[in-house]
Amino acid sequence: MIPRWPAPGARRAAHSGLTPHRGRLAAVTVAALAAALVQPLAAKAAAPPAPPSDARLAAEPARHDATREQFYFVLPDRFANGDTANDRGGLTGSRLATGYDPTDKGFYQGGDLKGLTKKLDYIKGLGTTAIWMAPIFKNQPVQGTGADASAGYHGYWITDFTQVDPHFGTNKDLETLISKAHAKGMKVFFDVITNHTADVVDYEEKSYGYLSKGAFPYLTKDGEPFDDAAYADGTKPFPPVDRDSFPRTPVVPPAKKNAKVPSWLNDPAMYHNRGDSTFAGESSTHGDFSGLDDLWTERPEVVRGMERIYQKWVGDYGIDGFRIDTVKHVNMEFWTQWATALDAYAEKRGRDDFFMFGEVYSADTSVTAPYVTQGRLDSTLDFPFQDAARSYASQGGSARKLAAVFGDDYKYTTDKANAYEQVTFLGNHDMGRMGSFLKQDDPKASDAELLKKDELATELMFL
Image 1 (cartoon, one colour):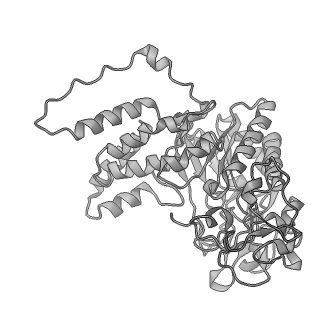
Image 2: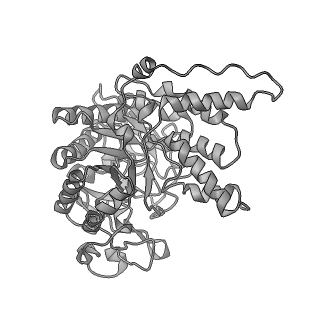
Image 3: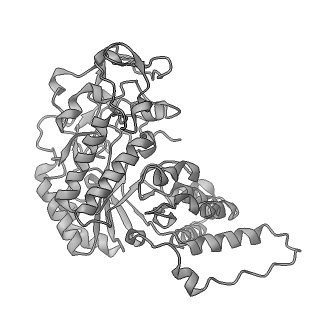
């Protein structure tokens, strides 16, 4: 896996168009194509199967309305500056204090919600039906020091989960954006995070390598070792802990003791406190992302706290759904409880169409599907499709991998979801764009050849 956080400020997000549209006809077509390709040329071709009847097609599982949405992912800071007065987020001083420096891509450039609102007609004109915004909550403006410093323009270093980052405007600006987008027939989705916050908690020992639970178990206040996984489903009271319960001693600088909102996030005991993730094994769910404070999502206080945070956004702002960051870096029991609570909350408010899709960075359907069947999300980003589409359209692979991906559609079926909901894409802000993949895979190809391959890949996505 490519680490999501190779270094503080390493996200270099832009915007992209994605679609959550994939039907059973695609599975049938690609599977048939794969079978044809593997037949020896001299072999007698088998009779093609009869096309499905109208009755059979009508009997397919109901599709969620969102499966026909065309998502446009936008990073507000990099899109349009509608109000230069908020460029520094109300802060004063150098770029290391304000985070603003339009000469450096690692810092804020000035884009905001007013700028995005002014461009809604342009976005809609691209065929967009749903805007997916990178996180817009208040961030720690700068992390790191010296040459390693960069700003939270990307939105993934949250300190206050209850307000819009002042660099982007105000909660009222957000209200206006959502209202005007809805008036134009477009939905609005938030990119949300439950895995971590900004880097505020430090360790007294000043060492940061990951320490495993096996070698350094959690301890109760009475010094008894325990496994947090045994309490993750919320059916048993979580053991009482204190600052000595962790393999490292968590400390918060005095100036940042109340930096986070809601206030429960300021308690160091709400975090795993095990050191930096290696993005493998146990550390994948218990480690810090290059220092970002990793929430102890096995704790019921964290589950309930994150439920309340995002329920309020649903209730107060009428948003249409969530794209959820770093899903596979959170224990499965958290998702089962959190997604169920959000679904129930939205439904009580007449929002039975509320749609949540998670980022599970894996091309293996056996890794992605459980977050739908067990974790109760509506969908995941379809990394398996992306990998197969690139192989077929860009790398000269056969259709077998595509056929295998579509053949695994059954893995996503639950009482409320199926494979139609998988959000398909060809490239994104973390991995790169399809155009760059095409060039990497065939450096000698002409522009005309690259264009044809790009069109083929796009046709696969819309198939």
